[in-house]
Image (cartoon, rainbow, N blue to C red; front, side):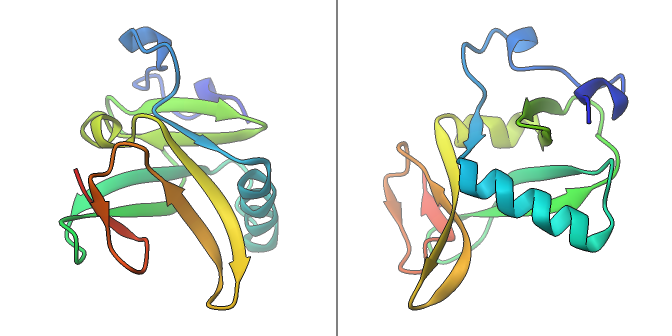
Length: 128
């Protein structure tokens, strides 16, 4: 999937003067996203990663499949996976790495944010 197939309204991190994408995926996260897309029949979809108000620490991460980009989205192509990030979320996601982890509490995506001042116990929300 090519980022340009989603919508002409998207931009790349380079278009916005960013040296690096606001968010990156580990190899395991890419593998699990591709696996889920295949199982769900979501060829041609992208993964929207964002930040919204809420959670026990003030902000919470969001991650979902999305067919079409929105006006102004940042489109990031990584290992045949396209990520979509809105410009507001990009401010909070700068430097974030998304991994897929398996542990005693279960398995799932984990956001590693070097800019978070604090995180909650479950790891799904943070303070900027």
